[in-house]
Every structure is written in C-alpha cells, then in structure tokens.
Image 1 (cartoon, rainbow, N blue to C red):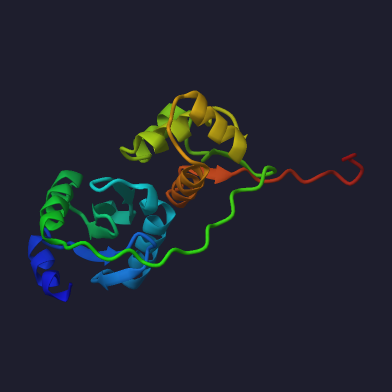
Image 2 (cartoon, rainbow, N blue to C red):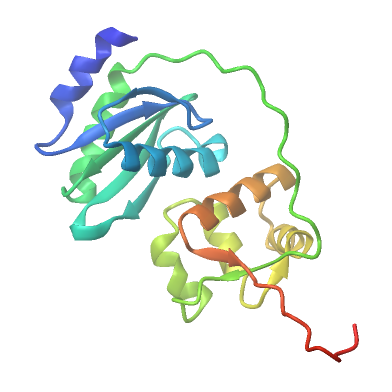
Length: 202
C-alpha cells in the first residue's frame, strides 16, 4: 500500500494536503494538519459506510478552504484539504481511484444504537427550508431525501417512515448513519429539549 503514496502525492493540485482513511474513519496515511485530520475522520466516520464507490462529500472551511472526501474503493476514502475548485479535486480523486488497491475490510464493529424515540431532529437554524439546505447536503439521493423529510422536527422512526413512503430503499442502520453524517456536517441538529417552568405540569 505504501508504494502508492508518492503516486497519489503527484496527483494532488498545488497546496493540497491529503489523507487516506478506511470507511470507519481510521487513518491509513495522512498529510493533513492534526485538526483537519480529526475533522476529516469525523466526516468519514459519519457516513462513508453507506456511500457507493465514487460518492463524495464536501465541507467548507474558513478562508475559502474545503475538505473533499471521496470513496475511491470499497474500504478506502481519499480526503483532500485545499483551496482548489471542487471540479479540480474531483479530477484528482478519480485519477487516484485508478491506482488505489482494494484494502481488506476491517473486522465488523458493534452496531451503534439507533436514536431513541424522544429525540427530535430538525434543520439547522441557518436554513429557511429543506430545499435551502440541499446546497450543503451533497449528491447522495438518500441524504437529500432525508433532508426533504424535515419540513418539521421528526424523530428517527418518523424519518424512516417518511423515507419509505417516498419509495427510498433504505435500512434503519443507513438512516441512522445518514443522520450522523448530516449532524457532523451541520445540516441537521437534535432539537434542544424544552425546560419546564417551575410549576408547569408534565
């Protein structure tokens, strides 16, 4: 695997740092600054398991920089930190895809618990509507359908049911993973629980 690292470096646009992660967000190799590496790992960990090969996500950073995470094989995600345009980074990622070997699947980890029914999810306050939020969701049809289901706050079961009614073929585990991904990107949030007034009845 190490022999391809110089080849990937040659594909990178000037001023671009990069890293490879498995789909659990565990580092394979990294040229990223530590704080960016942590953010990239969180982004990958939140959703890469349900991405198809060739799927990608982009997250804007301060100063016009962005990180682009691209699934180049079944268990390998390339993350780039750059000022370059998205199209330039996608070209580099697709070139890297041709030279990156398949990495053996890591041993399965214990399934994360599904969100409890008393937790409501809603759009981040910066968005006026689900349609407004789509610009930051990425190309995944399932993620976009999930965001469109949040015209009002919904719990996990309501989101899952709304997706099935929209004919989206998705498992509960995929819904939970997409929710974590969209939370990590700041598109959706958990609705704060309302505090009761001193004499308010429950």
